[in-house]
Image 1: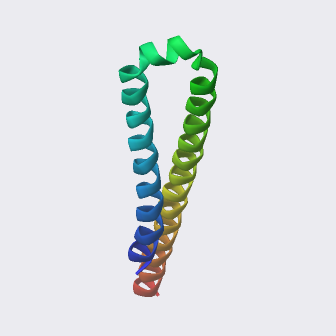
Image 2 (image 1 turned 180 degrees about the horizontal axis):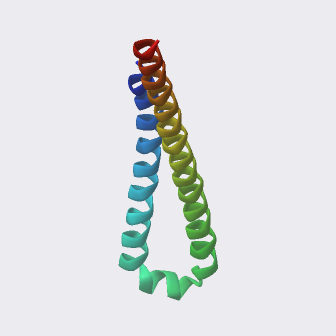
Length: 93
């Protein structure tokens, strides 16, 4: 039951990270395709600010996903070891 419940949360956060990955990839493609126009209009600063904003959001989403995965795994391990100890102590006594 615990892995199923945590999978819902992890799945949602994983989709957020994937969406940011796609946005960053599309951003790189668009900036490479329009490189000459960017240089001609002096929009390097605006592109740099937008790129930094996208990378910051991607970093936050990835960090949150990692924390959630580690927390879920830790909780599942503690519950599993607790149940194993309870079974062993029940069998010994």
